[in-house]
Amino acid sequence: MNKPKICLLFAGGTIGMVRNAQSGVLQPAANAAEIIRNFPELQKYIQLDFKMVVNIDSSNMTPTHWTTLANTIHKFYDHYDGFVVAQGTDTMAYTCSALSFALQNLSKPVVFTGSLIPLNDIGSDGRNNLIYACLTAALDIAEVCIAFANKIIRGSRAKKYHESFVDVFHSPNFPYLGELGRPTALYEWRKKRRKRALKFSPNFDTQISLLKLFPGFDPEIMETVFDRKAHGIIIEGFGPGNVPTQETSIINKIEKATSLGIPVIIANQMEKGSTNLHAYEAGFKAAKAGAISSKDMTTEAAVAKLMWALKKTKNLQEIKKIIEKNIAGELTEQ
Image 1: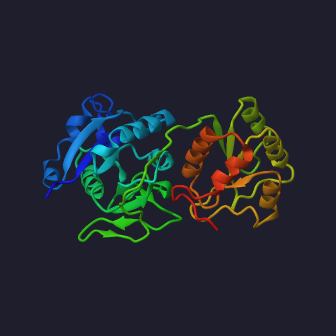
Image 2: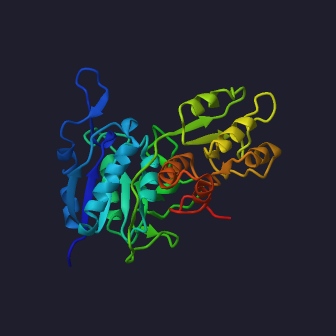
Image 3: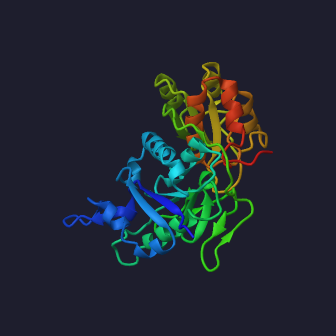
């Protein structure tokens, strides 16, 4: 029986970092390939190939890197049974969401993983995470996901919620796709392997702004966004998407954005739950001014989706349709 062929794409992060001898801070290793290849036991189960894409701290990850990763997967798509991407955890949820839109209709998995502790450090979580991610890439699953701390999470639903505990990611508004262990459990709501025509659309418009509301937020900040010719705006509102409507009202700024053809997406600051612009007057006024609800998307997914949508069209009504439609499992349609 032929072993599954898995391609491991390295994109940096703690999993491939070493400590600087002088300062003690973590920095990308000079030769991350040698670190990652030190997994002889995997060859018993899979045929593993390695490709270096980039070796950076994920704080430096940009949409250009998302496109590079998507292009690499597309280039070698027919050569492998699955893909693993090793990346830093800080921006992994953004990258996973972005690739969920760039690589739609997958017939095989794209599995992200990483670590909080470098592979060469005592007690590293990277070894188990990388092994489980490679094994996950050979399972009956066909979507962008994260394999981390024995969980399989839909990529477009993932959120980093802890910095010092190895159980780094969770999925606040969607159940896990599976759990890794003895035995491994895969749940029925995952997307399964079957022949599908890949929909490849790897480009993103980075000219957007993300604003987080706080008590006393100055509405004139949005004028700076307009001056910089933003193509889209995401606002993290209060509760289910409420915005100020009195002394510090932003309603007229939402109206201005709408008149300029700039989509305004209202997300929320909650750990769990959905944006609902019809629950309170403060949200309803935003919707009436032209704001679009992010529903139960994470902010990370909303950012990636808006960037992706803006590469498709600048038409406000078309953007609204795209944002409100479930495309990559990122939201619950109601």
